[in-house]
Length: 248
Image (cartoon, rainbow, N blue to C red; front, side, top):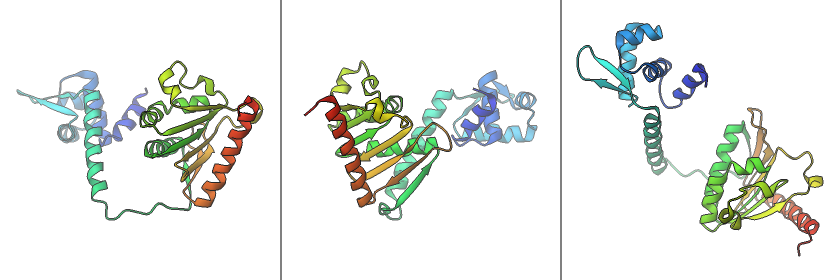
């Protein structure tokens, strides 16, 4: 990973830019004084001392006993785990003390960008209470092994449709036995390799094109008529697949 990208990702864990640069410097060089850190990073000494003090407050660095004062980085995995655990607890408090439960919108919501789409799918899959119908490429379905596996363990109905369904979770017999698979014939799947369609509990739908970029766009809706039409379309597709496979 490039230095700039590494720094940008550290910002997501609550560090400022100078703090992230100092943390990376400590990870690379071990124990350092403020003077040494300033020389290595090019940051002014006054800003370095403020930054190192802030790193200790954020749980990213330790102060070593002795003079001159020296600093050492908290291990990267430990720091990340601690921040995630802290934010998870804060999140629970926020949800518990939310000013008021917002009603689920029955309109049409555009979700843009690959990561935001994946976040929405993650939330939808784990929020399922009865059934999941998920149609996508085998590679994209495989990304959701953990979430799908959790719902299989909870005895939810999970139906997966894909042009390469046989390859999804190949070798994972126990997981596959808890899923209903439909292999979409190539003639029906042509030109739809990047298409994603997801129905949760016959109440929520997400559909769109996902190729892994910032321009990916999906439509999310809980609008009852739209969900009903979407369910019928997927039900008809499953019926065509069953007929082609000679299943009753």
